Length: 330
Ligand SMILES: [Zn+2]
Image (cartoon, rainbow, N blue to C red; front, side):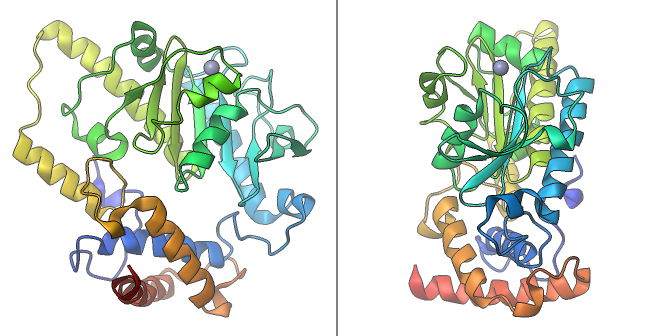
């Protein structure tokens, strides 16, 4: 595992200033990138769904979805027309894959813009019937900006057997995925099926869907696909390891503490963290996004790519301001 290439970009500020400093900085960076037009969510100031759907930011998300569909198909995580991918591109809308199409054959033109009430607003093809599952996650977890549902064989085998793989065995899973959950079975595509993840999604970015497959959420489509890869490889590894030795030795508890501390410094959420006020991820993210939305300099709005050193300086500067703001207000 290369933690230096983690999903939290490098920054010039000192990440050990406070337990929450790195988490705050990672959220600040994301919010600033949005203001700079590098993310779809604020890529256009327009509320017009057609403008949003055809904006450069959303086009980048669509291309990411198409690339991810190919990866899922190449890794045999989707079969037939199975699996679906979505990304939240504004408060009101998600972009998602169509129904009845192989994820290996996806094209940008196949994707649809759908509102949170599951109505297709833009796009030529009917959207995935599994979007209710995705919507349940978006409505439950503010941090979720992308959702992937698919059928990777080893993780699905565990879901079919109703077995949650033993934890605390491989650092990669603990840091990037955390504790895996198992939902109860319901008929796919129904509201009841979507509701099976309601109580699980907040504390688990990866859920085994009983007798069905897996669903992962993350801050980007790419990261959600990483989690799919990590959980499926983990399930495969544990299956092989348990044939070599029935009782698998876990990572020692003090080393697990180290891993969780590392995860916290990387700004990744985990239900095992202490729940002090400023580490409640949803509340923290909403607070910081609101602050950055008001405070980010106008030259960082909609101007495309910024110089990375300049971006680091801005993130560092704004992080200090946000920390001070949070200390006063939370
Ligand atoms: Zn499925």
